[in-house]
Image 1 (cartoon, rainbow, N blue to C red):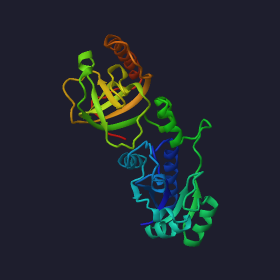
Image 2 (cartoon, one colour):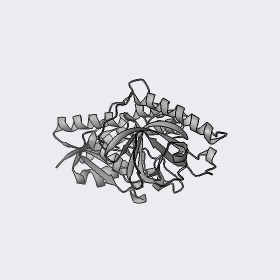
Image 3 (cartoon, one colour):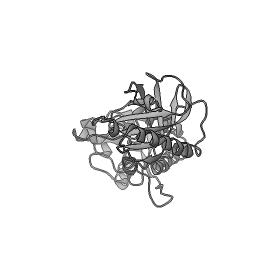
Image 4 (cartoon, rainbow, N blue to C red):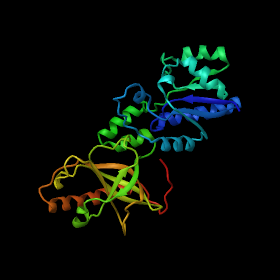
Length: 305
């Protein structure tokens, strides 16, 4: 089987990536080929710089699911090793792409790859010698600002989950397992589910209170999440992700849960008393429910990244 392929880390599979994947489908169809995406199990920078700590927008599993959702059933996840890092773009094309039947390589408009950081013209010339047609993708920037993983990380680190969602094409999400907390929320009248994220490398949005959609137990429900160190409760430096799920009955301990961040209501702050915190949580509930009006809640979940 012969393929039209593209290469990249595709962290977030954001709207720019999605536009590239649509072009890949169209290119493959026009040439009578099957589309395929080549990506990597580890962030290349982490392999090249041991001290680098990535803040990922998607886990490998989420990334594969989103690529498949974009209409690309073939996704090759490569181990980015020091040996692979030393390959020039031409050597990568010759040793990896050509043996797998890649006959067309679609490059992102600003993408360079290989140890030599080869650009489109260099790759096109190399492809001509080995029977791989290299074409250049169009840039996605409808408002003049291209979507990029680095920009989305910056937005999330600022707590701007709404603009991050605009760039991603969906609300940013975190998944994990519900673990036991300190039960302070129950005493305040706002019981919480404490999320332990599935990946320590996945970015956690800035500290603060957020309106969220909650996927848990086969349902999607509304809720509000606090990310932070709970300064009113002298929680130290430990960061917790606590969610009050509206209308929830019963315990969620041990269950998988996914949070979709819809809007940030306020930064985290210290309150002088638990009564003051309780009053703020009441106001947060009203604000979160107002935000949730723009996001219909279904009774059954459709698991997505």
